[in-house]
Amino acid sequence: MIVSEQINPEKDIYFLGSLLIAEMDKFRNKSIDSNLLFESIQDSHNLSFGLFSLVLDWLFLIGAVDIKKGSLVKCF
Image (cartoon, rainbow, N blue to C red; front, top):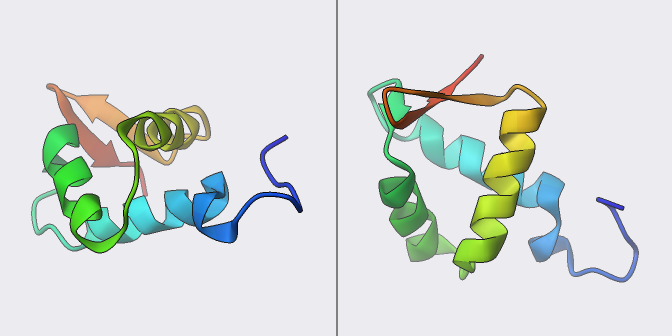
């Protein structure tokens, strides 16, 4: 289950997905390296790499991000 009443909202996949998309908006170019995105989100939120990967997988599955030439690209 993606949304649960027992989980802290700051660890919810929907919430973290919105943070990653907002973080991607801060970069001028359309593509961003996943390591750079992780470092950038680490500056503002304490996020484990495992949870970061899970959120990226979820964003990829719903079609919000794609991978082109080894970089992440927002699809909208």
